[in-house]
Amino acid sequence: MTTPKNPSDPSPHPDMAKKPCTEAARGAVSVASKRKAEDLPTLMSVSPFAGWSPFKKFMVISFKGSAKVADRSTFKIHRELKSILGDETIEVTKLGSGDLMVELKSNDQAKKLGAIATFLDIPVTASPHKRLNSSKGVIRSRDLRC
Image (cartoon, rainbow, N blue to C red; front, side):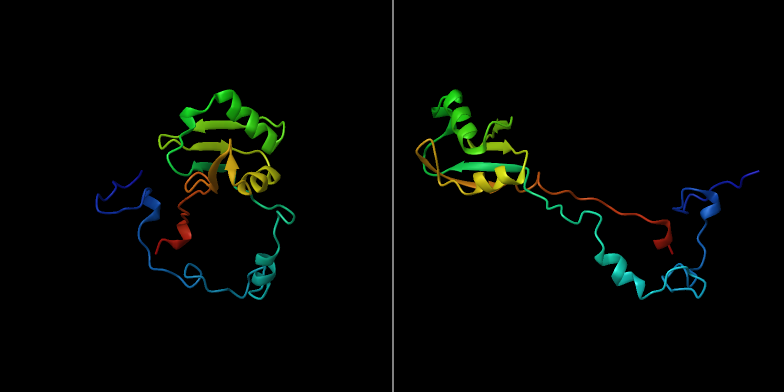
């Protein structure tokens, strides 16, 4: 038999009613814990991705001045990008601002594209996309509920 849920109780389950926080819930290290507190810096320094370096997967090519990408042939744009980045397939999208967004496959491509100053004889700047190269999230834990 379950008890009816109190509408003012934010807990999703009746067994998780508000209880006073214990020392363990506040983060105190118990004597019986398997890991010692001094092991934490060692655990934090070990990375499972030790030779891996992230790269900016999405880059934006912004044209300086009044030049627009719509004035150029799509075949010329593809040929120019292929000569800069290599033969790997890439995704290119025209943005509403008239800039080009390029989805890259490797760190080498990001370095090559970041170093360009002209594209189809037009001065440009290549920069990482502001939002697509990052992620946001919320971390939740029952242990933090006091």
